[in-house]
Length: 108
Image (cartoon, one colour):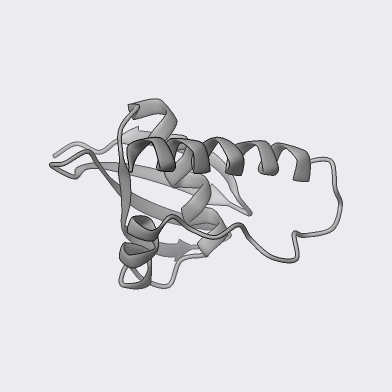
């Protein structure tokens, strides 16, 4: 499962970088991994593209499995809380239009 999430994360990042040169929004976002999708559905009203960008970034930084704990719009951005690893250690992302401006382990 971790290899699948890693492969999907790499694919999302590669696709996101390719999309950076386009001026039009992507027509269809990439599908979410099953585990992340289940938690995303219950997480809140955040933007799915922003959630996936956060999951990919935190997964790369933490080198572990990730799940969305919550996602809430905050002005022009989305604040996404991510659980890392088996203990769901909380991380916080600030994301806007799929671009992560902050990804840090939350104090807890």
